[in-house]
Image 1 (cartoon, rainbow, N blue to C red):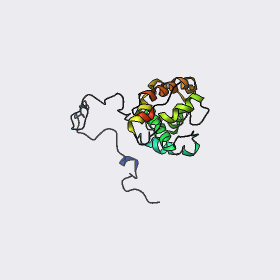
Image 2: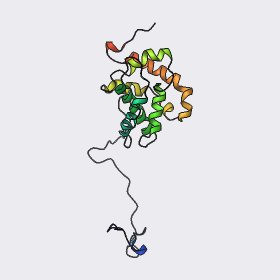
Image 3: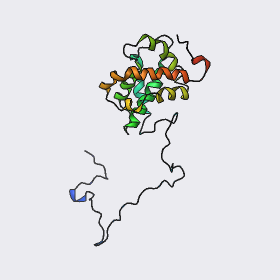
Image 4: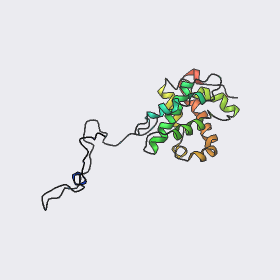
Length: 189
């Protein structure tokens, strides 16, 4: 079997933990890091509404969410692309909060939170299509929905989610009132 030419054949040829330095010479401790490069943010990553959730490989949530396309229970006037955009964005935010790349559990969490695989109250059937409308093509709409989900909810385990879904869905319903555009408003009785 061929071997990589960079793999040592004998144990004594393996890299060592201690560098081969002259006696009495020590490697100095690492210096602290400073944001001094042109693209570095001196004050750290900004936070707030509509700024997103930076994290490692968060775009993978789009691939994971696309796998749920055929399993979504869409209502009248709902589009799969809009639903998947919001689901992926919530999964991205959840994964970024934990400092890791998105996994399928993050997407399942978002699907459950928005009610795309289960029973939905009659009120939610009325307002959910309006909340996620155009989310696939409108960053402000998508971030508005995602920013309504509190970090405390995103940090909880998936089995704790059913207790808090009503409160989060109510917050999403309130988000509909602040979305711009006359076509986004629905009549409330």
